[in-house]
Image (cartoon, rainbow, N blue to C red; front, top):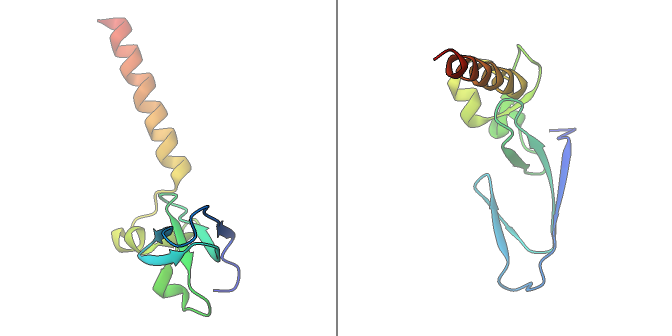
Length: 101
């Protein structure tokens, strides 16, 4: 993957016991990793060096965003902004129903 789009640096005060699991990858403290955020669910995915993009998830052909393997398996394009808009619409609808009744 050439341009993952993100970068994380883990720096913990206790270097011996600090470990983090990011997308199934155990990352020791004081390590730098390339990352990307899924365009559908905003999951932060750690990108292994020189890996095939299909191993990390994939590219959604509808929104042209990088997605995690879970969203790739779902097979439908629902970008995060669309989910937020649907939630706002539902919220407005419920508020209007409360005013009615």
